[in-house]
Image (cartoon, rainbow, N blue to C red):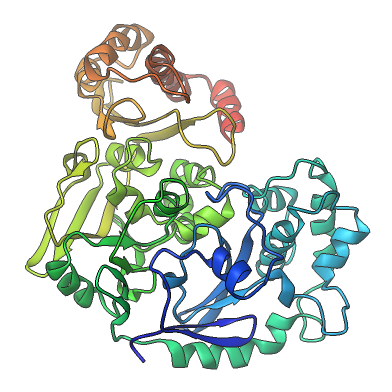
Length: 489
């Protein structure tokens, strides 16, 4: 059936032939299904009170991820299994082990955030048999609590880790075979269209179908993870119609690593990309760990971060410093260009009508090159950058700069290279004197704005100081380098 969105909700088959293109999963759960365990705290994917699990088939295996229901659109749910907190306890009221651990460890006070915490802990419990303290804290980055101080919740995670998922008490283990079979039946390579006129949502079955759609609907809004687009609806009340959902396209989900670099499909989420990037380019992996909370990283895509073109997007500075290219696709063909040429002006990218971002290619840093990226925010976790700077350096045998690429976000209307700074460094000895002389070149590259995240003067001075930090990290004694590594970790 290609006129309905079909998914499973807590074991029940759902088929929707009438749904607004921008209806959120949270509104559907609370208003249509009266599943009020999931709460609305922020409506922007920040607090985690609305956390649910969404399961999907990946290479034949059923994978569950925590997501923010407040910014996840119903139109993106085809062939998924949505699990809310109401599904955890047994029919006789016996609590799930994750819920019981929260009771035993006094992990709830006012209780408003508790369902979201339970679902985040549940997602961790399903995927990590022996989570470290760091893994627990990472899983909870996207959940905010004003009462408990988090320690009782961490203790609950440690307690429940001693119990492994079992069909005896865990519904997702009991239902796994059935859910896999039912999701297989729901998968389709046909295009789904729900609604008429401008109030339409479209789910293409293939990348080729997406290209054909955009040839006829060049002004349609493409939605992948919705971690930014969701706020266009919940905060700005923008009209996005028609909306094309692409998160289910397998052709955009591939990530591969070869000797010459990493190719990332536009639909690959931050969470999926993390393993490859953290292994091959460790500094990039550390950056991803600071993008939103786990729910945002499960939903958001690197391709979407690039296509959106925000001047404070986290990944473009790192990608530009590494010399990444972007591949664009349309019904008339494919073209590839350097990523730093893709961003033209604020809100404007080199993307022709009908084109979409298909993939990114990230060259592997050459042997001996040093790469670093620094995200500056008011709080360490789950915050938007005031600025973000990335550096890639190569020195010849004499200690002279033979390769240098520097890029910043939050310093201009687009992610932008510091070409004047690069010119001031290239061919010079990598010394403190060279760095000191090059700092003034930032004033030729950037004229940042003042906003509520930072003043222009702060941004400019911080960018200069990050160059100095990068110099210290790449030229210090072994003891100094070790200290910087520990601070970064």
